[in-house]
Image (cartoon, rainbow, N blue to C red; front, side, top):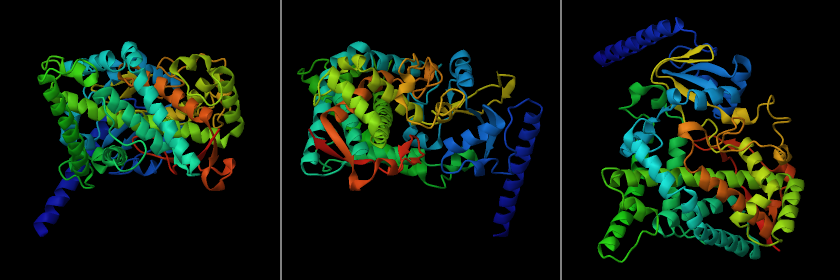
Length: 493
């Protein structure tokens, strides 16, 4: 036991010496201001359970570019639209690497994922090219419009059934099922969950479990020397979840390959298109992990945005009434919104932008990393630093937005600001090389689903809750979810 204590003491001493050496090296560079780090933990104690809020408050004291020490990890936080533009547009290449969480090394996902591969990697370029060509191109999205319409109708039917029985709808869960099945039909031409019951919920729960584990604070991400230990078991649990999803996806690919061998299938969905690409360009392993990315990133983000938008509308009845009036005038009360209708529904578009401003799906975006020292606005961002862009703070910046905490879609009424990564005041999907590839699908889906829900039903909060009493607390994770699910009763027209 004495030898163990001596060994632990030596390891601790080496750790301290290493930290002192790094600090001395960095002190010779002009790094951005920030709070003084404590020994070992650095500034970890300042994050709290809602880092986006804690970092926004710290930025008010230390400025829009701020340097923190999170355990062993030097972290630079960007909290202004001007600096976000510098990082994601003007110096995008220097900031385009990813700072990958240890948990996502499960099943070697980081070696195959379009989210985590470096942009100078040929595989990353092939995957982005395939996504842009076979999934999110205008032609492909137009061709799959009937699938989105069908899934929309199923959601409305589900809400109608609930309304007839006087039952509340869990908006987030219902939107999640719709998003999941929309993606699975686009890719595999089949549903992965039953829109009318919880009987077939395994895959849905797997995706939720993945997002929950990936969003947990992980000691390994702050103290990489703990990697082999995995003290919280997060990577171990994610390996189990990833394995189940990958096994399911592999089975669907095997099934499709057999159909193609029998010669009774043409290129009709995304899977067919990707299987027709040369394995040298995209092999089966990359296809499986690409689908894992799509299901993990493309369902939770969309459903959270829809839940937040509905919550804001139910909390602000005047805004909801104004949106319903626009819908009634343009397409008629009680009808589903068609994607072609959205251009004629400017107030609905304003509502979506305002929801994304206040409730960006990923509040700190996905962490970036610098591979070399980078000069940014007179400061040095040291090699190996994690870089976080606090879009939550930018969306609530009183220097940009009047009364930033108010839900006020009218602020976008005559504004040219958009969410496509060109206007850095509003970048919920990121910008530059690392912009979310699913943005074209999201901006088609969200207004159509939201508009259809409020145009085909009147809604009341479950349990007789008054609009002003609706809980709007956030729950921080890899995506920014509502702490308490939104339960609302649809009242058929």
